[in-house]
Length: 538
Image (cartoon, rainbow, N blue to C red; front, top):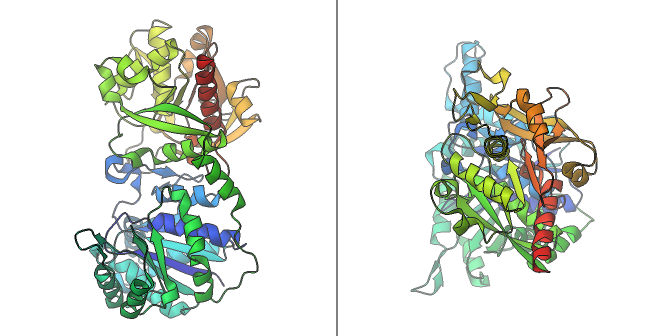
């Protein structure tokens, strides 16, 4: 029978439920259990695909084309295994399903209510993962904070599941905050007591408390939390602030979180978590031999979570190259009028980020011209690749009016245009070219050398593509198209010769980078950037 673990949060948001869930899953995976993680989001959007990155951070895309919460990126990076459509469920999706069933007459004329119809659909979605996969343990993170109106149906569904399955098959881990009052020089447990009280009012007794804290929890504080929250003292887990999220599995191992979970679920494990590869990665990450600075040119830089997967991919590829990658965020709008030298001359490499819309495009194109002419290693992702095509058309091929139809719908030189199957789409949500697609690589190319094979699968999220009518003209001008979709003949990868590293991709390689398997292209980009820097110093 599949065991279920629910992770709830209290006191405040952004405590790191996703990191705790992923860290626990990693420890259980190391003990040879088959584990997956699911996120239940309380917002009414069907998915985050239409949300502004300033609102919700990046939209993470799975192999099967689901637009999901960015926490799924943490799950994949920690577990080194893919997630799917079933790993992210929103209130919007729950209500959409129930209302459609009501319209079809599925409820036989009954009044449709939050209990039991909404809660039954939540429970069905939770169990769906186990039905569709061979999982020993399913960890479900409930978004938001206990006490939020939006979270109430999820807590009720959790209460029912614990009642139906029994306390040894379904447990609750409650993540909370122990604030430190510097004036009093004290850690305070009262917010956690109130948070647990909110859970108890919903009919849920937490089995394990994980306490975020800036300072070490004394035995006295743990005893107090145990007494007032009705939790075994050994199940009060300290989660002290860490230097990096990748320290958390090690910290949770020391706190014996996995042992407490196995005891609560009546599970046994003869294998201890060694985390050998993880510790080797941490060693390289914390003790780099080299250092490079890469500019991240984007339009959502005020919120680092908007490019979360890119930042984390640089951590992975940097560690593999024994190199600290310092990511310098640069807002593309500033590059439209400011002097480029001020922002770009001190960089070792430049990545132009994905995005949508006209804002900041001019700055991205100006930056690409600068790095192309000054031989600074360049990597463009999605819109970044498209901007590289436009820049090359204007400044090398002298097609001065070249543009993307996303920016200039009536341009006479549409080198980037909307995909044919996108032109008649009215609904914006979930309708882009999404998910894993095949790509065939040209032998001898940068991309081929990086991957070490001729056929790859990468994740996509876009409506616009390179206009193949211009392919011959670009090739004659020196641009290489080294990655092509074998079915649609869509251009996936562009490269330039006579440059330390100049590569653009239509897909999102950052989404498949994990701790144990850094993405080949980002590895190659960091390696080339480091090599260029060392050669310049020699």
